[in-house]
Length: 244
Ligand SMILES: N[C@@H]1[C@@H](O)[C@H](O)[C@@H](COP(=O)(O)O)O[C@@H]1O
Image (tube, rainbow, N blue to C red; front, side):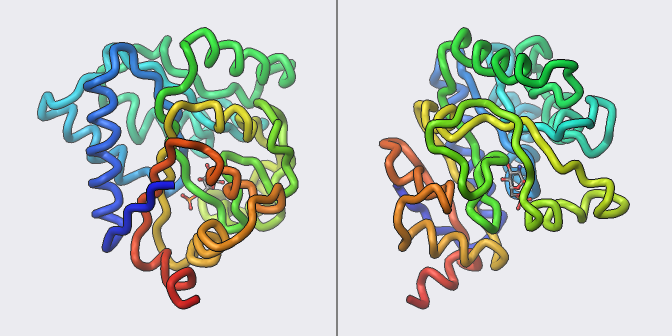
């Protein structure tokens, strides 16, 4: 893993934007894997600015999101489709038929998972996958214990993940308990991975990632076995790792 240390969230977002804009501008038909959560918001804001300044275009870009809550449809303000549309898609020139967010209200969720995999393959695979990390080491919604050979699947969310994400909902009872998520192998098949880590709340996870073993108990640890991973991490997220 190529670890880039930065001062703070803004610098992390800035560096991530440089990398993503560079890939969009150099690849012929860029295929991006995208993540939700607070971490990549700064990346999306800055990318929109670059679009407005005509430094990047999404005309030839295809996107695949990592995950979606089961039971929330596109119009639900807590769905990840809604998030992506608000934070990125509706501000840029992307063709919406090239946007793929798993459908969390599909009648047949197993089929929906297979469809996500098939579409990724048909697009030629993911060129760059953007990732955040959960406090328990989850990537996408692959919670601790998920098989490293998993492909897009329906997952039960950990209690800690439900609690962490409750901040977006009216009450914790409204947080879905399941999600559709790309699997670990799906993520690992990406040609390049960009992991963004910011803030003290991620400091324990970051220390485990840097100093711990590769184990299914800590899903992000598998990234150490990928040959093209860039981690952009800020000082606050490094406090535990660097105190050891
Ligand atoms: N499914 C998402 C992940 O894709 C995200 O990376 C993680 C961290 O979120 P945040 O960036 O808000 O800390 O949690 C969520 O549950």
